[in-house]
Length: 337
Ligand SMILES: NC(=O)c1ccc[n+]([C@@H]2O[C@H](COP(=O)([O-])OP(=O)(O)OC[C@H]3O[C@@H](n4cnc5c(N)ncnc54)[C@H](O)[C@@H]3O)[C@@H](O)[C@H]2O)c1
Image 1: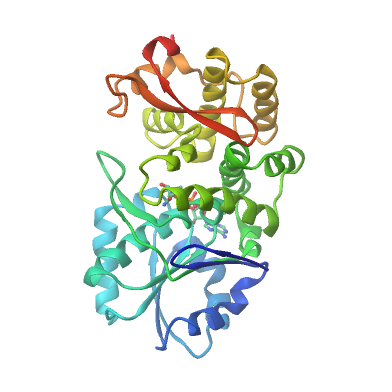
Image 2: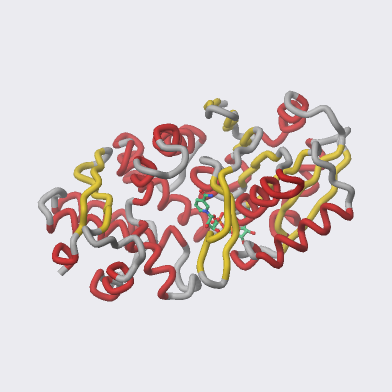
């Protein structure tokens, strides 16, 4: 079992940790009523296990359709109506039990309903375990763009059980690996080298990956400066996701192409070595995160140059100089030619 501390909450990482959920809840919560927000896939796979591990509590379920479309104003409203119908009060506890979609939506419900209800995160995808459940960003999408409405709202704790990943489809598992490869590249060369050799991860690597994010978030909780390091590969990754209407590529796949483009830019401005680009490219090809012919910077350059983040003096861009070492550079249009 691994235990990490954030300023306002603890992260428990444990194979089989779901069986100890009741103990953790009792340490922070005095009532019997629990409100579980989940999606249909996770409900079908795990509701019996959850009920089993929470004997003695009274559980009310809000079961939502799986997929990104669930992070919408409509579903936010419907889920809140259901919670109110089921009798939720301001001091009740909400469980976000699912992937990043459920975590982001439920966290946002918890941060806004009655001006704030306590909640906990039980992430069930690799991406949610290493990334979205950590750092306090919650929110929903608008048709104008992703994550446009949201807030910073910490859970009471995060419980990560890697056993839950056994049912995850391979493409979703690998999607989470992409964020771990990014974490290794920006902040932990040992983790990066592990991921070069291994296509599955354990509690140890999940914890190492979270530590990279944790350290950056602690330096910059409200996303003003250092948190930007986490955006390695994301500038082009977001442009790729957007240009393909968030349908063709999963987030991890889009940022994988984005990381390769960022490494190429690093080479172009003499900050990154060719060898690193080739090593990362081989790794991402081997894991099926990218395919040849690779997506190229030329096809997304306009999106970047016209992005609101591209200011008169350029764009803050994250470069990996060597595994574990990163730098913010000001990217000018000229650097992208
Ligand atoms: N808040 C943050 O800091 C942050 C960071 C990164 C990503 N995100 C958000 O996370 C979301 C993506 O999260 P995701 O990749 O987890 O997607 P997701 O929540 O849609 O889950 C992916 C799929 O896996 C299924 N699933 C979940 N757990 C499963 C399990 N244990 N076994 C089998 N199937 C399972 C889901 O039903 C879904 O079909 C995006 O909306 C993104 O914006 C947020």
